[in-house]
Image (tube, rainbow, N blue to C red):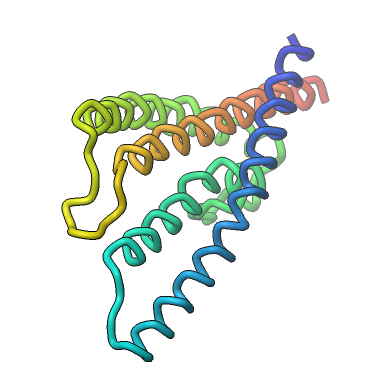
Length: 172
């Protein structure tokens, strides 16, 4: 059983570490695009719809693809009134129950709903409603599904690590 749990943890960590590090480069791309947009607005007092949409899409990708990475590195927002003072075993119980009762069901719900949302967009070949906007709007909608899947995968690693911690500390 521990081998299976360790395999889940290793796989989730590897995937989210890789995706998180790669998606961090999107912040550089976003910064360069915003600078280009600002200079363009200053020099010719104009911008393009595709530039503004691409800025929003890059921001969304940074958030969505980085969510699993943030959970892996325990960088999500947490109300820490009591948790910081808990023992490792109590923290593991909170993480286990929180993941099983809230995180994973939420990921499944949002994953299913976002897939249907993106699939509907793909089926009609949805693009930007703005003239000069980006085509294939369904791509950014599918990113919601991918981001939630990565978060759910890391949630499974949290569950696995919590079980290991609870087992190892219960004998002490």
